[in-house]
Length: 362
Image: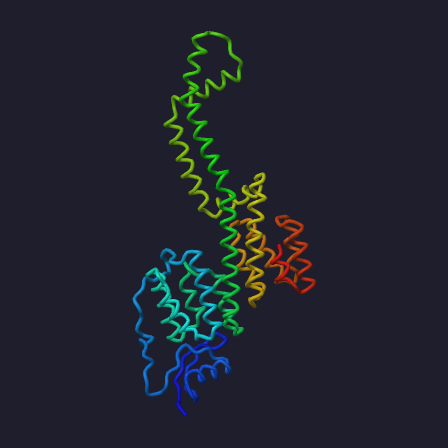
């Protein structure tokens, strides 16, 4: 009976190497899976795998510290394809090989090839993805790690793909909803500035020639128009300087917090921003809990998708209270930042043991 040399990783994320007796490579892989080992390379002793050795690295631009290679659409599509290949029974390395062959963009092809080579070298998939922090978020890495630990990586990847697609749809919906009002606001501001600066001064000349007493609102408008007409270049400079200063302030921790707090207090806009942030949180948390990620870890990662420091601090405070034995719903309710309906649904989910389902419905 042939003897095969194998490399892979265990369900706890550790590497595994050794030899195994089997009729053929396929049987060897099946035996290893039953023993809790996920093989990345299986080669008959005395033969070479026909692949480049793991130490030979494909040249590719390192992603850490550089701009992202994968767009949101690329990531969701790759994740779904990856899950489909694993469900079909392809080993991890072979599935990545198919993705490399299918990739049309050179940066993506290089990224996937480098990931494949590192896995062939004995690293766990989650450990490799963690090094590409610009392309794979902490949520993605945590869920892959949970999939490795549970032995259900293919199902976790399907959940991830569905989650990414929903997030993309939400972003598109919010962007489309805000696009029209923003465009109208910009156009209206430009028209108003043009009228006050260039049109109204010509009309005021007509009133001046008639030498008639004018009501105070008209006088105020004429004075404002004259000011804009005389100093419009200075005003534009001040506006640009103000925008620059505000952007610098927002980049600070205190500035970000102030802007986020003001955003939540704005009429209409604040309600929309709050619900979008909470929707992101509950969707992410539901997906992570269903994938087997521990509650405290899931909260720590999920809060980062909210994009609002005030709400993030609220979730972090709730997380600390949970450590002390409280439920999730109580600290969120006390904060006043979460709608009563949301905290009530979370409380029901905790009592019924169906937290993931309740979070998904929020």
